Length: 71
Image (cartoon, rainbow, N blue to C red):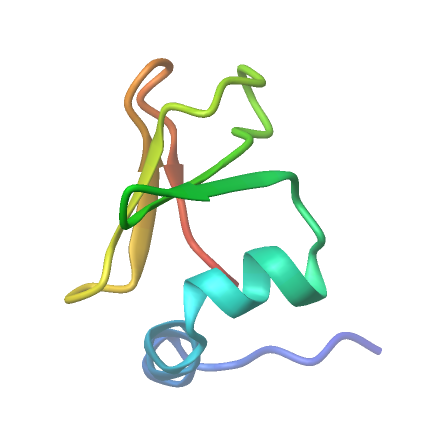
């Protein structure tokens, strides 16, 4: 049986999961961390042209324009 969660619950969960530890330690996605910039390998285009907005906890790829977020 599938469990469904409210949009409010999922939004709260997404906003409370820090993206950098999730990418580095849980998902183990290849990343580069230099010059105070954290870049990770985009799962869609395989480029390191990604960025994370710490205010919204959202990530995106600037090459393929894919929006990436934990869910």
